[in-house]
Length: 291
Image (cartoon, rainbow, N blue to C red; front, side):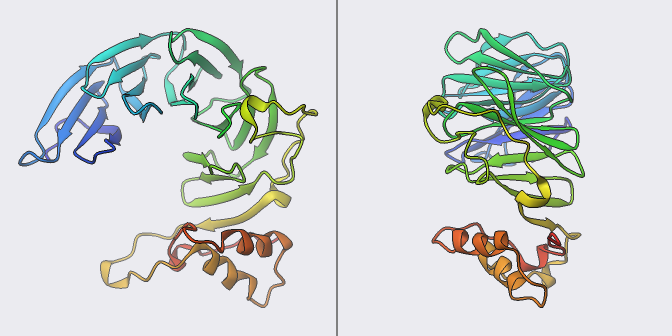
């Protein structure tokens, strides 16, 4: 496929027939895999760079966030449904809650905004201490996990209060929460960290809308709650590629090393020793947390 405008972000359709890309000049482009050379068509534009694209949970629409501070909702046919305004800085990330009832966005204006999924009205504005580069919802749609400057934060959507703050050495470029709300995974440039929420029963990530009565949030101690921290090496040549064992095999190798394993590492082996556990390359792991 020949790309005439530098791509800032992209989203592949669930049927794998095409690809939406957001360009630095603000163009939303659709690429058709079934056409020769990936035939493309510009569907619409923002007035500035498109910084993020994400599908809505209903599978019938997707969202874009732009450097111009706006969010747009698009149908899967590429037609613009709605422009949402409110942020006063670039929109770095946008997502929908698991139940599809909310749209959550973050911006350089140091706010996380919550919008009603049906009406697109701003229902909550959460003021943050840092610029938030990426947001992800928890499975119960009651919280949002936010990647800030050298930190990760968890906010309750209903009240806007910060429940947990996690210090990091670098600002996360990507993060996600597993469907059981046991782990938060962050990507920090050349490093992937897996954080556990198990020691924070006072923050309820599972019951619908946080129905459980909660105590004040407890700061997460990175030294104590990080299961594993891995460094990603430089890309290797094709002839140097190795097999891709399960994550539990890698953790097990660490546990079997001369260094005494931590209880957290041992527990991680037990939890991940299941069918369908994440897989990664043994060569991708250079350094483990020394605690």
